[in-house]
Image (cartoon, helix red, strand yellow):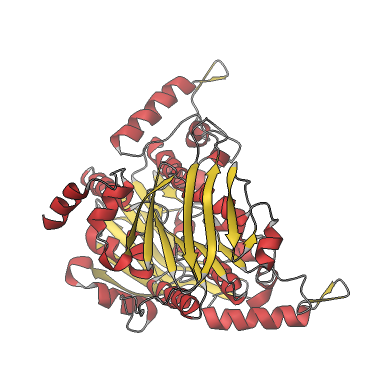
Length: 517
C-alpha cells in the first residue's frame, strides 16, 4: 500500500493572465498534519480547490492510496472521503445552521427530512469538538466566527478522512484557535489526514508535521517542521527576511478625533443589547485597540460607528461634527474610512473590476468623474498605483474581476482603498485577516504611519498579538460593554484574557496572581 493517502503530481492550473499552479507536487501521509504555506496569491487555495473538485487542472494527476482518481466535482471528493473547510464560506445565507450542515447529505423517510436525528448528531459533534452553534440560527444573522464553525461541522458531519482546512483560524479567537489545534491533533490520532492552509507561522510550528511552501505558483520545497524555524519558513515563503516585531515610537496623542458617548445598539433576536452604554474617545495620533472574544458586540459597535446600523441611543462625534444620524457617504466625506470585518459582504462588489472597487468611495469626486461620466484613464492609473504600492496580485491588473482574486489580495485591495482616502479616522476591523507575514508587516507599518501623521485609528481585532503590538491603548469588550481600558505597553495577555472572559476591573488580586505565576 502507498505511503501516501493523497498525491498531487505535476499539477498545473492556469487562469487568464496567470499560472496559479505551476507543476506542483504535494504528498500527504496518512495520519499527518501537512501545512501548505505561501504568500497571498501563491496558489494554495487553487491547489486545494483542484483536490476538492472545484477546478480541473490542465496537467497532472491525483492519486488516493496509490490509485489514480478523477475528481470532477465536490460530490466525487466527498465519495472519496475528502472534505474542505473553505476560506470563503460556502453557505446559504437564508438557511439555518442545521440546514447548511446537512445540505447534500440529508436523510429522508417517506419523502420527509429526518432533521431531528441530524440535529442530535450535529449537537454531539459540536460538544465533542468544542464548536458551539445555534442549529436554528439563520446564517445571515450570525457572526463570521459562527459561520466558520458551521463550515467545520459540515465537514465533520460527512465523516471525511482527508480534511482540508483553508485558513480555518482567520476568524477565530486565541482560545478557539487553541481548541481547533487540539481538535486537529485529535483528528490525526484517529488516523485522519489533514491539509492545513495558513499564513500563521506559529500555528504551523505548533501543530504541523510537514510543510510545503508555495511562492508565485511554484513549489519551493517541503520541510519537516521539527527541523526548521519560523524565520526559515518566512524566508522560503516571501523570498526575503521578514521582521516579526512591530516597530513604532510612543504615541503623540492630540485632540479627540472620534468620540462615542453612551452608545447603545439593540438586538434583532432578543431584548439584550448588543452594545450597552459604551463610551470612549480616540485621539489624533493614537491607535485604540478593541479586544474581545468574537460575538461580544464589536461587530455591532463598528456597524453603528460606520452607519450600517442605527443605534438606539447615544452620540457619535467625528471631530466636532455629530454624525450619529449621518449617512454613510457623509461619514466618508467627513474623513472616516472603514476596513470591514466581512470583505465580501461590506468591502467589495465581487463582480466589479479591481479598478472599480478601488474607487467605490471616491468615484463621484472630480478626480474620477466629469459631467457624470467616469474618467477611466484616471481610474486605471489610480488602480495601477495602488496595485504597485500594496503588491496586489491580479492576473489582469485593474481590469481583473475581483471575485477571481485570492482572499488575501481582496483584503489588500480594501486596505489600499481605505488608506488612499487619507482619512482623519480609520476604523480597521481585522485588517490583516488572511494576509501573509510580509503583507501583515506592510499593513501594520501603514497603520502606524497613519497614526504618526496625526490620524486616529480604531483597531478591532480578534488577534490578541495584533492588538497588543499595534495599539497604544486597549479597550476590552465583554457582553456589549467596555469592561477595561489599559495601556498597551503594560498590558499582558493573561490580564486581557481574563477581561475578555468577563473578569471585572476589581479583580486586581487575581490578575496580580496570574501575572506572578
